[in-house]
Figure 1 (spheres, rainbow, N blue to C red):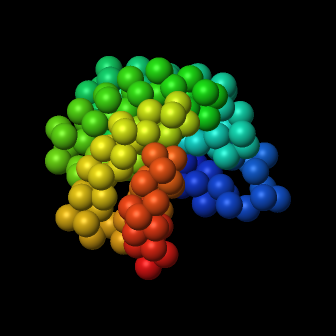
Figure 2: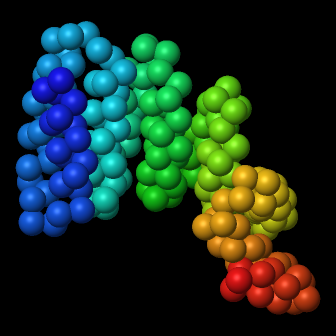
Amino acid sequence: MEAESYVRKSQLLGDNLTRQKEIIPLLDKANAIFVELGDKSWQGLIYNEKAQFASRGGRYSQSVEFYLKARQLQEEANDLAGLRSTLPNLGVAYSALGLYKEALKIFDEASVVAQKRDNTVLKGFVLNQQADIYEKTRQFDKALKTLTEAAAIHKKTQTTYWLPKTYSRMGKVYLQLKDYDNAFKYTSLGDK
């Protein structure tokens, strides 16, 4: 389908810094076709792509607007697969803007989607994002509890990329709590 090829081309151009200006027009062409077809799932994906593009450029307010539109369309289409991407990314954008209360609310919603889709990797990602907010707001006990839960998920799912990062963050939280033995232990585990 023509519209899908526009989306794929825009995704392929995402890392090509000399061709960034081509991305939004491709997404707009695709969206016009999906609007005509009444396909809200694909329209939601288009807005999600636009939001990611805005986030990569540090335009988080614009990103939030696009994610909210994506969310609306995906909810209307009952598109849990789309929401699986949109909600956590919306939470990250809110967090980048320092809107922690809003971010935590969205991360809770993303956890519900993760549970409905039996997606433990997403649940681990969401927990890491929540812990980041708890750290920033100096709620170290909550951060540690959340990171411990995330580490258990990363072990279970063998998410080797996230496990050392989570351990390192646990070491940082233990340091804030002045628990130097555990700070050293988890910092060392993060180096592996």
